[in-house]
Image (cartoon, helix red, strand yellow):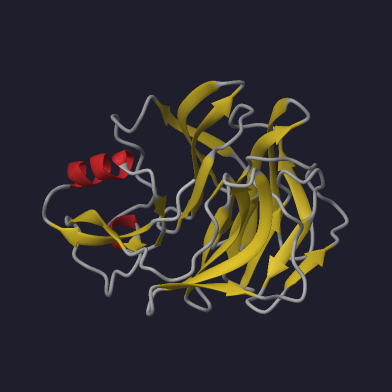
Length: 271
């Protein structure tokens, strides 16, 4: 429940120092894809590989989203802004449904006043569809399995024929190669979930119940080098997980558990 923001710059201090610094911070961390796997907030240009990262406080004195947890943040690559929606406001004990955008050039938050908006919620899932330039939001702690899209001007509720069940704490990311949003797991009605769904811009498609075990709060991201969705960890009935899975659009493959100590298989062939 913090409203500080940190950006990252590159230095030669070593990646270990960055990891420790990130673990020790209890502030909101924002970034976007690029250098070392992330061109980080306010990084002016890609830097050479092998340089490490340091957090810098860029909170400033301007307006910003309310103190919140379990909100969702995505990077809108079409408009070059970070989109923030919803969350649980600790000072009031309630959820909110405000939409905010962070602009790197000015390093400021802007609250958007929009004609329509999803209902208040937290623990929802969001991903950015870069083909259609839409932020996709699904469900959350509101009791319904609603799907919304945001184009920078308004939120539009979609009414697909098929849909995952209502849930919280699910993972979502955008598969850039296959042009779909991938959703996995979450929690509903006292049980963790282990289903995989994909949003193609008009409907949800159920893919499989096989793969990672049921869990809530998995971390998911898309690896463009591998052309795969990566899933790490989560929680199953209070048991913290540290397994790593990869999704190719058809099958989940277990890459390992217990952390990244053994080398993972190469994801592309070199000649």
